[in-house]
Length: 420
Image 1 (cartoon, helix red, strand yellow):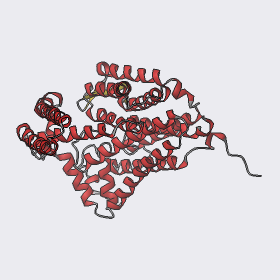
Image 2 (image 1 turned 60 degrees about the horizontal axis):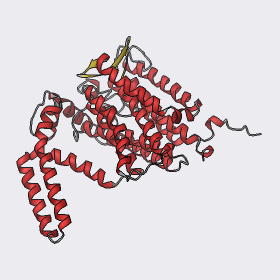
Image 3 (image 1 turned 120 degrees about the vertical axis):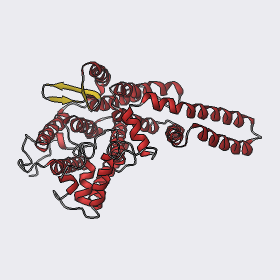
Image 4 (image 1 turned 180 degrees about the vertical axis):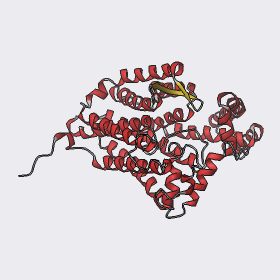
């Protein structure tokens, strides 16, 4: 007689679980490759970073199992208190945190350090899902946009005060959640336009940029000169973009750290700093490029072996994949991330609970932002801002946070047939 499957695992989405295990295993193997110490060659040697990562992984598996055992209503019931606790911990970290690489975003518990900013991504996804599902709000209405945006922006602002720009940027991805729930695509276009205008103004200067804006506005005026309402809107838009262009220099000089300004200028080709800001990215691109199509083979990467790339097991773990596994291995890894994102969205769309659906899109947005920014940074398409690659980068905080984020969603999905 066939044994009945335990309820705990009856409705688990094993595709998501399988992708999770695959990424964690790939991460561990590449952390081992990037930090191999010939005097301590055992991958489970806890005196080395790859041995410590094994402990973080085992703890992450235990956390994942614990989440699957917890009643999923816990996350909906306590979303608001959890969010408030996360905000308070972020504020506490500003005053009592440990400074690491210029960022005061770590709390030290003896020899163990934890980064609260990684976990507030979870609390923000939960509170957005709770607020937007409970009230069944329509984000097309102005007053219904304000509170979700405040919930998104508040942790990002506090994290920025910790001088942790990379983690703060991730919160911009939550706009995708609002877009799925009815926010006009014009807001996304506006956000892209602001970023593009900022970059172009830095690149060409404010006076040239305003001249270009004036020419565009004049051309549009000639096309719509018979429509008075559109002309007024056009004039207003030109004035706003011109004011923004004028403010770019001030914002750049006063809101960014010196090293961040240098990295952006280097990326835009306005400065050269081969032994400083350019060094990490140059070495990363050399490592990835030297891998060719098939790669040099596991543990055979020379850039990796001789430690040419700083932070190679954390922010720059992708270049280890590129060098040792080549274009083919890198493509497989990127394919796994794309599969993860598309699967999360597909699973989110089948939810009967608005909370689970909205939370699912929050999970997808966090993974997308971390994945996209990290890969772009590693290959020189974005400035170096220090952001982990989900499940691959070394460290307990990011691994545990991404594990919790994903498995709360898997738990919500496993209960979808029980929800009305």
